[in-house]
Length: 253
Image 1 (cartoon, one colour):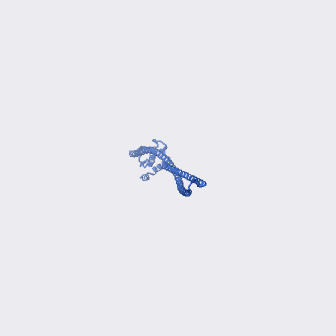
Image 2 (tube, rainbow, N blue to C red; image 1 turned 180 degrees about the vertical axis):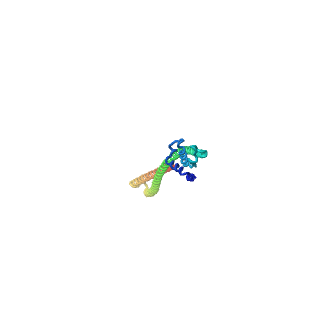
Image 3 (tube, rainbow, N blue to C red; image 1 turned 90 degrees about the vertical axis):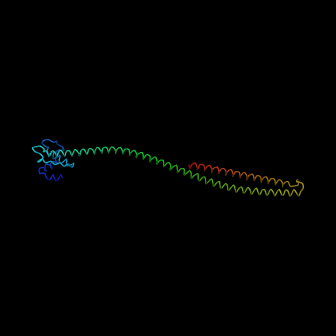
């Protein structure tokens, strides 16, 4: 619409408008009675930048160096439009400033929240690492206790078998010694029946018998002592197994 109005102007007016584009009179020179026409032409250009339709023709809008009422009305309407634009722009600017303050406040709160989340996350990470390390230590200790328990059970089984074997050996020796003793007693009784007085029995035979009996008793005592030692070792191993089991339970808790 502005281009159509511009094309309908006289060549002289077009020339003034084109010259104004380079002179920029309104940008640097105050309006006076001498240059008001050029200033009005400058207003036309400046208002056009804001899409405000204002057209000034110095040949038709000025009579005897006085602005015509119609031209004055157009100027006033253009100024009112400019003021409305300025008011809307100011309100938008104020709204944007307020929004900017709100956004800055929200940004500060968000930054503070993010920092708290980061600190909490780092704390949880550290706690998680500590829990993993503690769990690994407990697992290592549990494995160690488990292997000790297996070793103790193996030793206990070995000692139990050894005790059973020694018991059998001891029992066999006791039985054999008992048989030998019974045979000797039978021989003594048989010899006693053959000869009337006991003094006739060979003293050396009696001494041998007593010596053999003494050795048999000493051997039986030694075997019994060994048996008691094995029993004590078994009881000690049982106590170690019980203590290891209690420690394992405490570690798992």
